[in-house]
Image 1 (tube, helix red, strand yellow):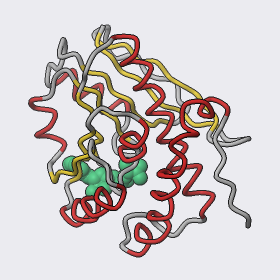
Image 2 (cartoon, helix red, strand yellow; image 1 turned 90 degrees about the horizontal axis):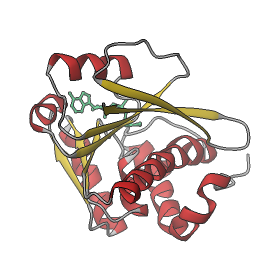
Image 3 (cartoon, rainbow, N blue to C red; image 1 turned 45 degrees about the vertical axis):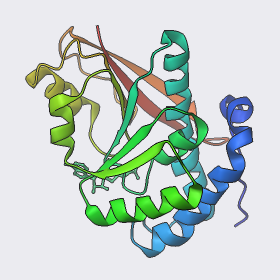
Length: 207
Ligand SMILES: C[S@@+](CC[C@H](N)C(=O)[O-])C[C@H]1O[C@@H](n2cnc3c(N)ncnc32)[C@H](O)[C@@H]1O
C-alpha cells in the first residue's frame, strides 16, 4: 500500500512548514516505536493519520486557545506512551510540553527521541498522573487514549479542581456526553484525519 503523508485542509496552512520534522518523528515511530513495543505493528499510513494528524488537531486547538487568551500555559501530555500527542504538539508550537508516563522505559525512549529531533521545548518525565492532578493549575492537559471524559469529569468534581484555570483536551468517541454538573463546560470537536475518517476531541473547561 502506498504511503501518502497528507495534511487535511484544516492543517495545510499551519503545519506544512513542520512537515520535515513530523516525517522524522513518523519514521521513528514506524521503526523504533514498533521495535521497542511503544506502539503495535501498524502501516505507515495508519501511523501518519491516526497518530500524527490526530495529534495535530490537539495542537490546532491549543494554538487557538493561546492566541485568543494571550496566556502562557503549561502543557502536559498525560499517558503519553510514544509521545502522542505531545511530540507533534512540541514540534509545531513553541510552548513547553511535559510528556508524562508512568513507565520508565517509555521515558528513556522519549528522552532519546527528544535528542534526535532536537526538541528544546519537550521534557519527558516518569510520573503518576495522580500526582500531577494533585497540584496542577494554569495548564493545558492533553490525553489521547488514556482516560475517558466521564472519568476526568468525575475526578475533577471529586478533587474539587475548580477555578484552577485548567483546560483538558481528551480524545473521545462520538458518544453524547452525560451531564455531570454545571461546574465544567464540555465541547466536542469533530475533525477529519484523512479524506474519510472523523475523530473527536472533548474540550473541558471550568465555567
Ligand atoms: C493506551 S496508552 C496511550 C498512549 C498515547 N497517548 C497514544 O495515544 O498512543 C496509555 C499510556 O498511559 C500510561 N499510563 C498508564 N497509567 C498511568 C498513570 N497512572 N500515570 C501516567 N501514565 C500512565 C501507560 O504507560 C501508556 O503509555
